[in-house]
Image (cartoon, rainbow, N blue to C red):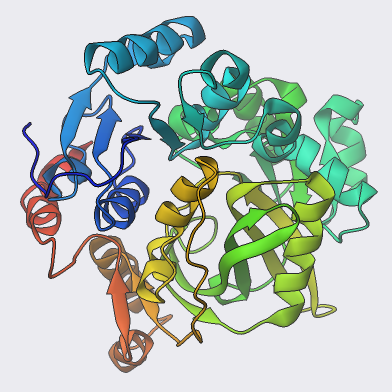
Length: 400
């Protein structure tokens, strides 16, 4: 694919590593491309919507066998750099698989690339929630009641200790989701516990399984802090509150808005400082209605799905991160945040129809939920082709 935007004013191109991930990669392309950074999008899927963006200079399809092998993937990146005569590119992962590959291979890559992920000793505490919850306990951060299979607890002990319903979830999501089609298994009684435990252990290593209480309340109680954090300080960040997610119980946000929440911001900063984390990340909590405390859920140590909400609030995190990784000075011109809703149009329509069908939401409530200033995951009037292609490819994505 030939270059579609103006010649780059930056010497180092950006390589966006996608894994069938459309929204996160597209947001990175737009943030970087608007500042004149040459961009390459690499994916195993031929229909990544980012390839249709005017800010994507070149799309490269890579075989899944390459990105499944750590050594092959490292060799691929070096060969790609040499064949295209690229001056020290910046690598950005957009999902957990690439977080693992880049972080584990960081030392082998950093002479030839700027790597947009911390090294493994830090990342592993975010990548696997077993380690995440253990360091949170050490740091004195409240978490949901949790038990780890690796600690040797039996199903009979769980039956006595836990109040039903609860969930079984993986420490590392990507393989579990791919094999089961779900992010977590809900368990209502001991018979289900035995059945779901067998299903879970056939999908992932039992040592990476967590049994956890369900905190009451819907997605409106999910609060996240997304930021670019460096040397113990926030370069730019926002707090968001979910409105809807798909599916509504354990899903991915489809409609959300940014809010002011100083307690959430400070708790998240405390976690990032404890980890000595540097880079883009999303820290997620849920507010427990039983005691109104924020309970820590997870960290996504990478660009996350709704990061373009910050771009709508005039905080271009992809470009700020690009500059920070290269050691360049940057304009840290802060603006007052205004409330903006971020909507992933088609998934949000789907979950809204389901909620209205179940009687959980009226048409009027839906309309009110999307009123106000908005930005969208894919639709953009300045870069419309990705949305046109998303619309045209709805049957393909539905079947897939």
